[in-house]
Image (cartoon, rainbow, N blue to C red; front, side, top):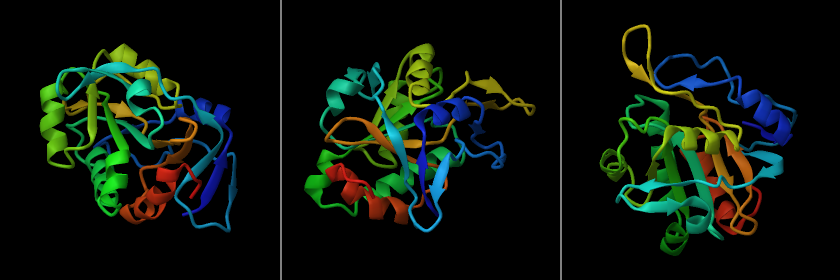
Length: 217
């Protein structure tokens, strides 16, 4: 994979148009459009030329307590992903990849890192359901749920579009959402790196030590 540099405005515009439905089998669309890229590099990280501001989200965690994303993750390396627990493929794969990579870090760095999973399907993903699902992946991952409109607005500030849960042509409930993982620097709290759904355990394992320090992979 190649290291890419994106213009944040173009990311926002493109992400509003390209979504992935977990389980839909439609892998033809990239979550964002490439503005420019360094074809000589071998990096999974997309480096944003204008880092995203961390979403001003106050939601409910898996313990049923209020969780202020900005306040709770201030000054900490943070990875944010929007998805849902009933997703059959992309969401669990992404979270498992992050969890496996995190376990390669020294214990002190694992404790510093915040991985935040925000549901796009709050109607089904209650605090209890999120907690049960994430416990099977990594109990340190923070799961958040709440009002859909609030979640949708927060995702939009990161160029991630999500749609209300609906029934597909087979009558199955699906949540359509962007599949990017955004990494926030502990130095600036800005979202400076973006990963697509094709990022692997090896990619995250290689990059996390630098993300912990707020460095660019």
